[in-house]
Image (cartoon, rainbow, N blue to C red; front, side):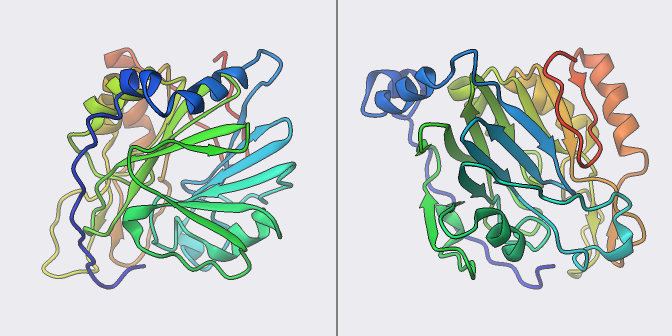
Length: 289
């Protein structure tokens, strides 16, 4: 896990890149191409992997987010198994939200991408090195990136509990739109993200409200979103479904997550009218649940 702060200034929001601006400006081709790829016969499938990891599959293309396959990252503290990444068929892509080892497992990324796959990372992270990956590209915040004809990925603001650079990802493909939020804190950009890209078919949000004691003096406050905050963000984003991620660590030295985080999320979701679909690692999202 990280041992030093690396704060970087957050660039100003590019207000011209609103949803309306995209449709009327130079990025119209990106969204038009995405719409063209949203035919009913191109059904997007999403599998939850370990911790915060996802795999998105379309006919002819596969995309991974925050892949994790290294058991040494959490050891026995992570109660869930690390499912095999499986085959990445067709054109291969991977996204990372930030550099921390539980969200950027370089060996897992290299395995998933093979010789020709593309790793896309938020530009605010600085240069990324991924041994075994031949194609690496950065993405400025708010600027949609076309990934072949299958996916469009846009990095959007996030706030890391250590102050390290981080971003979330808006991903469109197969007629669906989702958000993956790494292990962000609560922040004030949810409304901007929701206005520009919402509503969302599903949002994958951290829920464990973890407290860190690795840096002193310890803050003794949650440095990852809590269940209540995840539900509030899903509500603001106009999400049809909230899928909890980033929970299930117990007994790790200097790392304490909220007890019963998943049940708290379900309870708050029911109170606020937000559908919560909890997936075990290896399970696939049911769009009709």
